[in-house]
Image (cartoon, rainbow, N blue to C red; front, side, top):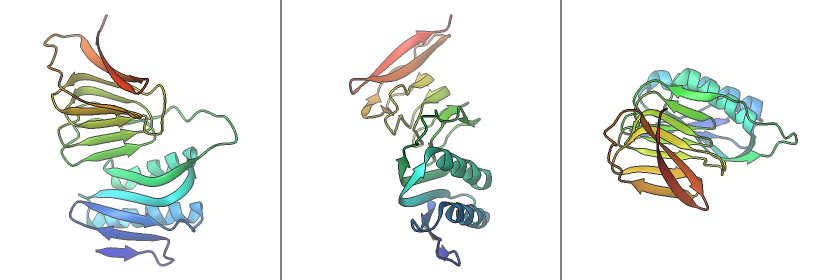
Length: 209
């Protein structure tokens, strides 16, 4: 399956697991983002169960505009969305990114991939075979059995927290990563915090006061 917008700004390709949207890097951002959202909504109506993967083809993007695109796309296709192959353009103004988070109130299931520029809050578990990728931190109010990559653009203070880590769970913060084999603590009032220091992943068990 393949579909192209009338102005050749976005080309859609599909398989059994995802729809790939190739965005023409020579198109203006305003035109490209508008066509992408409209066409993505149309594709999602045809195949709502598939993941949408957006390939920006090495386009330089401002963090603010990229965040807005992600927000607009999630409105029409839901959480199973990935935006890849882009470069973050440095802002001339030293303004911090907006303090917003992507909140998911369910378990993430096998084959599901969440990619975002925001903090991620999962009110549920990250099940085996699912994956979260974020530029910032990830907070899981449940168990991690799948894969979580935080601080993907080198955010130094990114962390991962959860209530339980199952054997075989994969955690990564920046360039520090590990496959964990922690047994549940077997007591109430505890949680895990993963952080990175000097290229190593550190996992602490903490207790609620």
